[in-house]
Image (cartoon, rainbow, N blue to C red; front, side, top):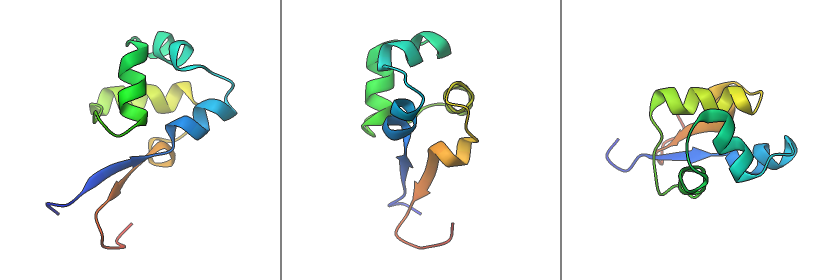
Length: 74
């Protein structure tokens, strides 16, 4: 699983929720830059942050984040 990466649907789900990056950041207690880097796959969030983001978006965490690893085990 060395080639694993974290995929996410944050941008789409955030837009569907009618939230800006800044609004989501405020709800979960981080900066807008942090939300931006998570959305773009630059930063992998902690489990706690991933759960907070999912809650703020009204989603289960596995609807927001998933493992991309080349195999189709999910």
